[in-house]
Image 1 (cartoon, helix red, strand yellow):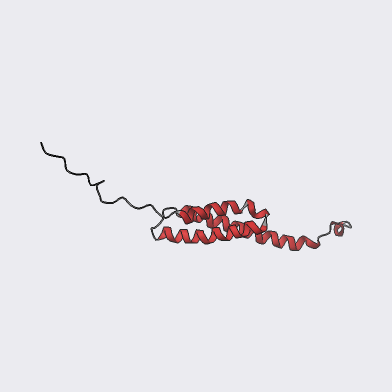
Image 2: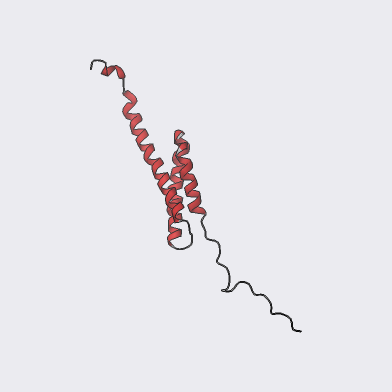
Length: 108
């Protein structure tokens, strides 16, 4: 009786290595967290900037084929950009309404 041949693993060679999806995932998480953190300006804005930067890096990695989560990277960019846009709107409203006095409209 002969011995069976040794097992060399699955057909097709080595399994593909895990994709580097960390940047897109972290961008999405930071982007989502930055929206409610906007009430604390010093926390929301840095989170949003980090989300946009990591989102762009993750998107580039996905376009090169080294990651598989392009959608998460885009979500991080979108949420981070939305937070930054809301920050600009709130700063402008704060500056405009700083000298607002409702008694100025009492004569109308």
